[in-house]
Image 1 (cartoon, rainbow, N blue to C red):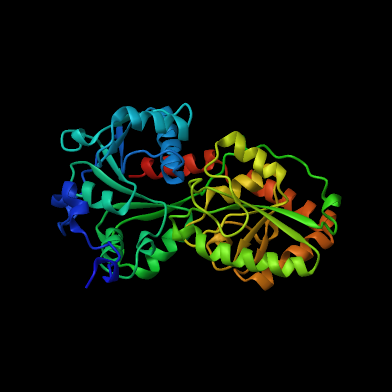
Image 2 (cartoon, rainbow, N blue to C red; image 1 turned 30 degrees about the vertical axis):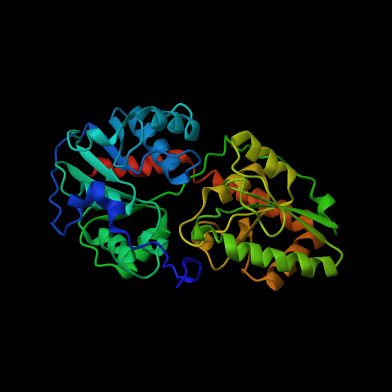
Length: 379
């Protein structure tokens, strides 16, 4: 058989991906080393990548702990130059505090508290000396097809690490699907409204608009952000709305600029100022979240952009129903939702964006920091 006709398996079964951390994968029980006072905290991570939302949250949290007097470290268990870690950390979280450490420090570094940030790192730290925690930012079995890595990720919630879930959705999934034998706590899912300041809109201009500008966040390489599904639904929505005399102009962002979307334009990955301008230039925003919530939705709300979200995702766990337009990942329901929104915008959208603004003021980073510090205070 020629090479062109050979069927090639999806390359997800290569154990050598884990060669560098293979010794850490075992079923040894977690033994917690408690102290009366904890001084150092180390987040163990897959390097630090620019534009990564989860690592940005980690840096925010680490900076807050540093300001509280903790010695904070970010330790990579994959190969990455420390200088690159520092550069990306400064990009993701300007003014961050804490020390970046490379993989060479993995075995010699000492810490009072170790914090896993991804399922792989839970195995890496679980037998280190110190108090072992797990900052859960998503239900990570859902990252994979139902198979070995699904099971490996699921087992991390049963290893005995002290788990802290970012928001209630992850904690609920863990409690329903896993045998939990260690603390599991939930902290506030935050927003930084200062980065995307609220701007009033004249919603009377939305009335019976013939062109709707839609800002859509998705990640081409992340099924959690529904890159395939959202393109299909929006492509069909364009067709349906066109029959009603409405043009749907779509601007995608969050993916590398080389990817070709089937409709709209791909703006690529944007910095904070570009995002703020995008939110102000568009009429509605969408950021699908099939697993744990996306910070982008809160950023849109913060800027005053009306948000559309889908019942199939995790949005209902994080937003009160009066702060966004709720619909389904279905072109018929989405099209109707948009038509209804522009039929009486001054009344509905004005109230919705104000309610969203008020809601965000209750879920600030300060609340998240207070929640996490309270967890540490009670170890």
